Length: 172
Image (cartoon, rainbow, N blue to C red; front, side, top):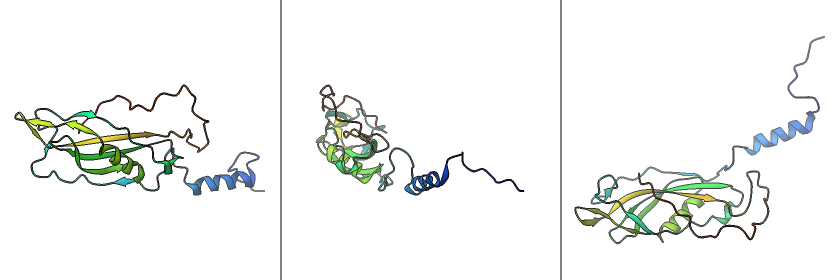
């Protein structure tokens, strides 16, 4: 009598195979399976716009606004969006574009926040000049969901404030 090949542990049964099939079909691909990722090429520099490597003084953030977590993505644990933009001589972000995002909604939230940021403009030969920068925005779920979409409970009264965290920009 031929031996049968054992594919699963004892007691795995039909329910186990059904569960395994559902997980495979559902695409258990990690913490943040995105249905709408964004990935775009960085456009060429416009005439008269400098890179951070070519200016005497890089732009400096004077007003930073935290990006709001998109409510439609409540099941995600975290996300990221990278934005490329030009800091104008007036200190405002111009020509902003999402070049990479885990989901398009993270990109939209990053652009909305960036429109409220202000900078001290870049300086070249003692005069302000427009300068291109790249900035990543990181998102953590405020909804208390773990990576399986299960509620982690309500936040406590001891939760940190909503004030933006201090940090620095690393231009590329």
